[in-house]
Amino acid sequence: MLRYSTAGESHGKALVTIIEGMPAGMEIGSDDINLQLQRRQKGYGRGGRMTIESDEVEILAGIRAGRTTGSPIALSIRNRDWENWQDIMAAENAAQAGDRAVKRPRPGHADLAGAMKYNHSDMRNILERASARETASRVAAGAIFRKLLECFNIYIYSQVLSIGEVRAAPEPVSLQGWADFLARVEASSVRCPDNEKEGLMRASIDQARQAGESLGGSFEVGALGLPPGIGTYTCWEDRLDARLSSLLMTIPAIKAVEIGDGINNASSPGSMVHDEIHYHPDKGIFRLSNHAGGIEGGMSNGETIWARAYMKPIPTLYKPLLSVNTDTWAEEKADVERSDICAVPAASVVGEAMLAYGIADALLDKFGGDFIEQIRDSYDCYCNYLRKVWRWEKT
Image (cartoon, rainbow, N blue to C red):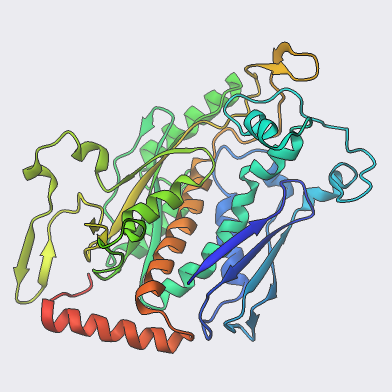
């Protein structure tokens, strides 16, 4: 029911997003989208591109008078750096198309495999689209998906857990403490609420910059307030954990994803893994742990949904690795493109957008309608049923 697509190149004229299937009547404005775009641009370790760009959305279609109309939504984010690249990247009659050609693919990037797939001798045709700049489009779309979720008091969060070898203990998050947690994460230059670990992460990034290196890391992303029963066990493609992990894996440089304590659970006995079910007349059904990440049997179980994504170091190194010049077939150092030293904090914001999309899509699968009030009626009816029959309360 809900889908989105993006188009655009890193140094092209603009990034474009089209969203289909959004219900009518939902309040949304450019300020809501720009806030999320600004969050993506922050983070210690970002490169020079972020000093050029100041991303702002232009709403082209699908929103009128501050509300969705039910029509496809079209968004545009202009690339300010286009002014410096228009002779190289123009769609027609590019006067300097051969300038800044990429012939020495970077190990770890899409350069070489993409050139082989699409028969491009200039690998700029690959890297311009494979660039993580595309994720600005996803964050713009994610701003709309998370506004939909907030109509049902469902909230998205993230926190950085590691950069390089520096690791912070994840903080548990609840609806009651969400505002304080959010403020501390947003105040951190690496989106880590642990002040001591933040300083160590910054120091690691500084060391990598001096060494011409890049750093990866990991982040946690979660959703608060989702009722049980979203997703299904009845068909493999609609299992919620499969859908969410697939979406997180589409983020550039993400190489592993776990739902809940997935990795540690694999080496622990069952009695230490499975979240026991409790009941109290004042609280209804509840759990004291959430190792499952809020998903059992492919369905939400009423606890916080959370997952962790692991990001490899960015492939562009300022002391480049060995590659091959595909014009001469001689071994040479790889090309160097302007790049970040570490983009884990920015990736966590992209992770929020992908999680918001996956949950919004699954939510509309269950409660779908053509306008927001219709969906809310269906949602409220289901939650009332859960309270009456199953003694479930949102916590």
